Amino acid sequence: MGGWGSALLARRMNPGLGRPRPERGAPTGRSPRAPPMASPLEDPVLIRPFRGHTAAVTGVAFDPNAAELVTCSVDRFLILWKLKTQCSAYRFSGHAEAVTSVEFSPDGQVLASASQDHTVRLWIPCIHGESSVLKGHTAPVRSVSFSHDGYSVVSASNDKLIKIWSVCYQRLLFTLFQHTGWVCCAKFSPDGRIIASCAEDKSINIWDTRNKICINTFSDYEGFPTFVDFNPSGTCIASAGSNNTVKLWDIRTNKLLQHFKVHRAGVNCISFHPSGNYLITASSDGTLKILDLLGERLSYTLHGHKGPVLSVAFSKGGDKFASGGVDAQVLLWKTNFDTLNYEEVLEHNFRRAHIDDPPNLLDVYPRSSHIHDERFKSVEVDATFDVPDTQTPDPVIIDIRAPSCISTPGVDKSEELPRPSASSARSSKRKAENENGSAVLSVGQHRGISSSVDCALDHIVGQLEMLTLTISILEKRLTCTEDRLKECIKDQQKMLLKENQN
Image (cartoon, rainbow, N blue to C red; front, side):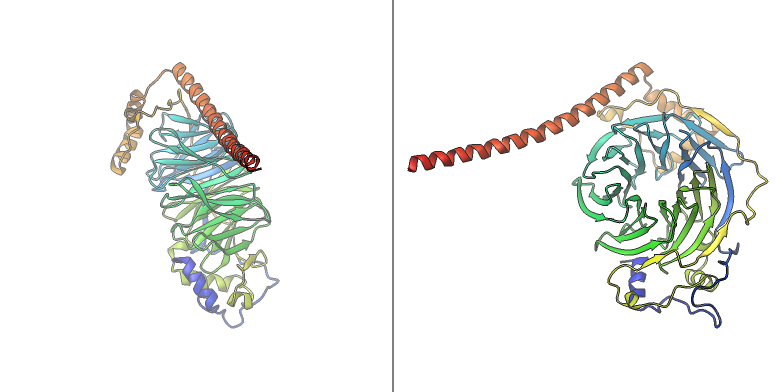
């Protein structure tokens, strides 16, 4: 399997492997003592909260260098927090309704956001707030995600469709449809060859992006999946469930590897640590939990939000993670545990927390994935007992009002947006900040267009989408009619032959 998958297989073949024995006198079962609290040396710790949104925070994402954090909210705004610059934050407006998802492109030069206003927006994260609107969905858009090369974006919507867009041309590439319920989430694999999606029809679909077909389906009859994501190697997917569960599937063998039921309410979001050894979950029970995938156990339970936690994400380096909740807070955390040797952390945590019950026959000869439920204790980290940065005030948030939206260019190659290299992207970003966004102005001049023509083009694009859908339906009906006519002609010919023979 590779990574934690192979370690998991080895553990199941030899239950004693990688499971440190407790010290003499250490408890081996459940104990009436309170769960152990965190030690600041190797446990996650809250760095500081950020307050700027006025409603629930629905999405969080780091840029590739973990220098910036972008958040989105039901308040219709995106906020870009400068983590390495004191008192610096920018609030972007443009969406007409709640923003449900946000993500940085792999090079950090573009933002994509999804909204209940039925649109996807592409933003240049600078002080000019310039954005493009991608229209095509006919219902609220639930999630948005970039491909590994940053050239494509996938969106999932309540219209039961998954759409893939070109970032450079800013137009629809193709649509995937098979789900029969609202699509909650869609993600590209790390190599961009497949897409995983989950919907309220209780299914998780795996799509081939080249052939544009569904190649596999995982069903979850206990509840519907709310979020799905690939592990860093792209061999497995993890799904969060409305029935309080987290499941991990091997997409090569189509088998359920692990099944965690450690939350007391629905799980809203998950994020893999870049090492692939840990998974963090955000739940409506108000907690974050860190799952140790190699040890097949719950390691940490994090408290800090006042109410359901809706979003969570690791930074690309894994040294930080951020969470957002219904309390309108964004919490920035330091990981800590990933800096130490994995076996040392595992052994130390086994001594501090209540360990699992001794392995049974299902652990040695598993007939199905072993369910890890909430009776197993974890190391508790409560932000209210930590000493976060309470002295530094919240950054002054600068409102960035988007001018007229960037029009969606045509198919002509002359209208293609430039594909910046990493070096040119960084230099253009510095110019945008230091020279008051001169690079963005040049892009705006290159594609500048009056607002009236922009609105007319948007209307035309919407009409063309409807026409395309109508033609597709008519083609299907015409094909069915032709097939029926052929069958009728064959039946008539058979009847004529019988009459001639008689």
